[in-house]
Amino acid sequence: MTDLMDPAGPADRDGGGGRDGGRDGDGGRDGGGDEEWLTIGAFASRSRLSAKALRLYDRLGLLAPARVDDLSGYRYYRPAQVERARLVALLRQLDMPLATVKEILALDEARAADAVQAYWTDVEERFAAQRTLVHFLRGRLSGRSSEMYEKFEIRTVEVPEQTVLGESRHVLAAELPAFIGESLGRLEKAARECGGTTAAPFVAYHAEVTQESDGPVESCVPVADAAAAQSWAGRQSPAVTARVEPARRLAYTRITKAQVVYPQIIAAYEAVEHWIAQQGLTVDGPCREVYFADWDGLGPDDEACDIAYPVR
Image: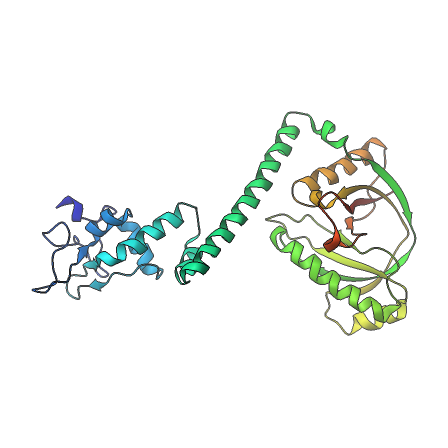
């Protein structure tokens, strides 16, 4: 009867120990009727899932037993549940989170198929980014960082004093794209009440943004009317400000839309930092990304953004 035992331990009943019973390895019949029941051991064998996994999926509402004996606590399944169990096992082989598995199981077949494809597209995009990161790390760890920096042309520009509308927030890397798009959209709309924009919008990083570090980040839109900007900002949340950005000299490199992703964009930042150190200059303010083009209308190889540092 070893195939009927819970391989993860003796406790399979909700309130006590013991084995999932039944002398028949397939669980037998329901009393004198024709309904077939499968013990957890037999069901685990048929579904290619462990008894431990089955208990977990029961707790999460993914795959509940068809019946739990009131006295013994033994769990029994129907043969018709095997297909659902095997589907759970296959989805888990994609390293799919259990919460996502549960969502997909609740969909009809067509929408479930689309959801699986959407999940895998996200996985492939993440793998592509990680593959690029591996290439970046190999270059850094092998001492070839300077070779990677050579493909970036570094320039300088003098930027005059300007009034900017700003919106700040603490965000992690995964939240950053949404924040940039939404906040710049709000600020550019507000700029119409403030004499219009006078220069390209930019995003200033007051501290590092990664999967563990959350900035803060400040989206900024230069505007013409300082008084109107102060009035508008005063009616918003404390995260929104109107301030004077002093005249600055920026060292920057221009990158394409395809390069405005991690880790390619990190190489651009480091290339500017490397150039600043070589020139004996000092960083004089938060680094920034200057978005001078219509993002939605750009192709992957179109110039899209300047990676810049204020210097003195």
